[in-house]
Length: 243
Image 1: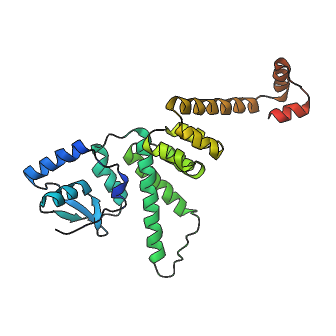
Image 2: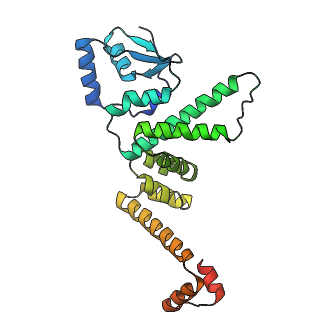
Image 3: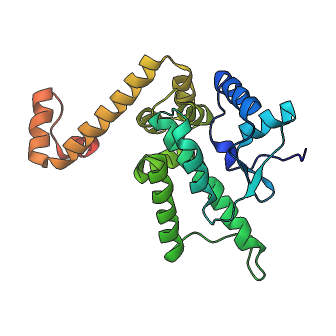
C-alpha cells in the first residue's frame, strides 16, 4: 500500500473520536472504501481517517487528485457537516485555514523567478483579495469575518495559554479578547483559573470599557458635577486625570 502524509490543511480539523473511528472502520470493512481519498500536493487533503482504517486493515485505497484552486474551502465543505463544533472552535478553524492558505500563497510567490522571499505588507488589491478570502472561509465555516479578525487579534496580544484556551473552547472569544488586554502575568493566571473567574474578569473589563466610553461622551460640566457628587476634586486637572 502506498504511504501518504497528511496535508497541513487536512490537519486543521479536530480528529474524530474513538466511537466515530470504530464506526468508520466497521463500515469500510463491510463495504469497502466508497468515498475516495483526496490527494493534493502529494499528501492527503481529505480522508485521513479513512486512510488510517484502510492501512490498518489492508483495504485497497481509492484516491483522487484535487484539481481545484481553493483547497481550504474544499476541506471545509468535506468536513464541516461531519463535526459538532462550537462557535469558538469554528472561528479558530477559519483562522487556521486562512493562516495555512497565506503560507501557501507566500511560498508560491517566493518560488517564482524574480520574486523576493520576504513579502511586503499587503496593500491595495492584495489586501482586498485577502479580505475576500477571509470572508469566503468564514462564511463556509459558519461564522463572521469579524469574528475571525478578533481571533487573529487575540493571537497577537495574548499569551500562549490564553490562545490555547480559546482554541480548545475552554475560553470564549469574548473572554479571550478581554483577557488579552491585561498584563501577560495576569493573563497566565486567568487562563488557569476556573470558568466562573474567567467570565467575571471578562465582564468586569467589558463594563469598565463601557463606562470609559460613556465618560468620554459627556461634556466637562457633567463630568465635574459627577466628580463633585462622588466627593472628588472638580478642578480642571482632576477632570483631565479622570479621562
